Amino acid sequence: MTRMLQINLNCCKVAQQLMLQTATEKKADVLIVCEQNTTLPHWHSDTDGKAAIAIHQETILEEVGDAGKGYVWVRIGGIRIYSCYVSPNTTFNEYREYLERLESSIRAGTGEVILAGDFNAKNAEWGSAISDQRGNELAALIASLNLNVCNIGSTPTFERGSSRSILDLTFTSPLTARQMLDWSVLDEESRSDHKYLFFRIGPHTGRHPDVPTGWCRKKLDPGKLKEYLDGKELPRNAYELMDRIRGACDAAMITNLNIGGQTK
Image (cartoon, rainbow, N blue to C red; front, side):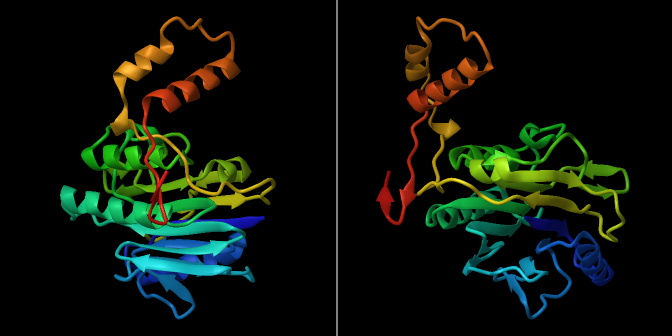
């Protein structure tokens, strides 16, 4: 069982000290951090010092991956864990470029993924009251990578005065999503304008997928969707409905995965 604590510290020294205390109380094994006040020697950080991962307990670190601007990843228990941060001051074009770099990093690897951090993006997919351009781009990427949204409900993760938003997000591959327990936004004081996210990952069973798979909504072909659905009877239960949805996505949304330079 791996326990993870996630937060944006808003560059606050007191918030960082309190996070370490909270991690000890929660017996957190992994800390997924954004906007740290200081990158400590045993932390793994992105190139800008804005996103980091810390191994808090005696957890075996299997691999330290590539670090780019706004993201860093490590592998623990066969899972690549990403910590991500995107500034709210980046332009939309810069945001798209960031997602392209992040996507390239994810697709270059194999196995399960946890993608977590402050993406400064709003979308109904993770409970936001509105969807903005950034949120739409991020949601499309998450769908194309076949990642699950772990954020539950509409509890804000960011509060500043009267402003409340869901900015701190957690996404996982399907197998890891099935092993996730107790994902929650904590009410505990963080001394940041962001709240703690806490979740546990149980032991994995079964074979890990060789490559990320999924669909891209931008590549939806309405003609193929209509062709697939024409003449089919209505689903009789939830299982048939899910099969029908998967079939429609396979038929109408072209998946173009570039893994290690090879197009799938």
